[in-house]
Length: 265
Image (cartoon, rainbow, N blue to C red; front, side, top):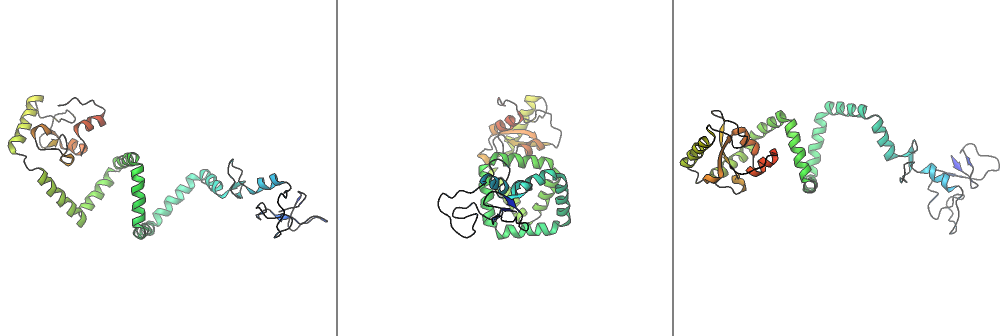
């Protein structure tokens, strides 16, 4: 399609008799210094383009405040792609999932190669994103692990069998043994006895439920990794599973997470 200098539109192969030579709407004829009636010749300052609104409406995206070049269906390429995705989202996701399953090895290999070739840059990007979105990242990670417990346990077991995993576990045990210096048998026995005296039976300080034989563990109210001590005042008895869930939280943080007010033991 072409635009005549008097505002009429005609096809490239259907020029009207006596019509004026127009210009293709795909040409950059709105740019400064370009004469729409004489391609290649500069025009004087203040030259007025006839039917400018029509040209702009045909050339740009119909979305409000979007001046990108028209691509299809009255939209620019970006908005056209977005509309197409929303209209066919289910089918696109289905095809994508099928493609990933059929080409899993190739995709994994590409991801590994891409990571090794851009390791430093990617690590910096991930670190920057984590620092800017720390709370949401931690929350997402916790939710993902809750939904994928079997997968997480399987990957952890596999990692512990690797050289790096074995070395890390060995170092962790060594550090813990060093931190446990000063913890005596008499102190542990006193903690157990006082727990039974207080509750009538061996009871978990984290969930307040009785502890069956073999399910008990010694808990540090303030973890050793957070400058906790092996003093009697910092020790308690808890279910092993509760102790593991508590992790590196303090007793106050544990009860806050459970939505229970902590008033001390």
